[in-house]
Every structure is written in C-alpha cells, then in structure tokens.
Length: 152
Image (cartoon, rainbow, N blue to C red):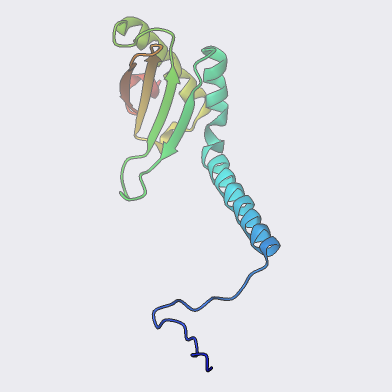
C-alpha cells in the first residue's frame, strides 16, 4: 500500500536559524548592562553641575530630597535657559505663603552660591507636600534671573 507524500501546508512558516540559548542569554545580559550604563552615565553627567547645589539644599533642609535640573528644552532651540529645583517641604505650601517664600528665598541664595546663574534666564522652585493617603500639594515659584533676588 502506497503512503501518500506529506507536504507542509503552503502557508506554514519556515523555521529560522537556531541560536544557542547561552549565546542569547549572554547577548541579552550584555545589552542590559550597556543600556543601564549608558543611562546612568548620561544622567550623572547631565546633573553633575548641579550636585553641589543639591547637596547644599539637602543640608539646609533635611528630608527635602531636592532634585536640581537645568538647561534648554531640546525641541525648542534658542529658548531660555531654565533651572528647576524641586523639593519636599514639611508643610502645605498652599496654606503657608510666608513660610514658602522664606524657603524659596533661601534656595535662591544657595543657587547663587553654587551655580553659575548667567547661563539661565529663569529659575523655578517647586515646593511639594504629600499628605499620607491623600493628595500632593505643590506650588511653583518662578524667579527671573534679572530679579533683585539673583542680581545682588
């Protein structure tokens, strides 16, 4: 009795080249290390000029977890240089404007001491306070570099 020849269906995919499992794992691990290293290096060198200011704010305001970033927006060339300072406070900045302004004034003084302000046209200080299990209260203070606070 003759057996009919078996042919694969016309729409079946052809098998691709085989790759050893250990080579695939090594390639994925290498890629992960390179990607992580690249991201860490970029972030470190991008924020390096602001580390002294960040440390000074953290020393002056314990528990504030400050983050400082600066530069221009890439998609908008020839725009104003911006310096951003974001920090946690232990009070609601919306409810205590006087205390918020004192904190901002001191942060501006620290910025003048630790950063070359000629590179920036605007300084923004964001104060935030997070209530446990509730909302985050935040207030932004924008200070032009030409302001008396920075021009002294």
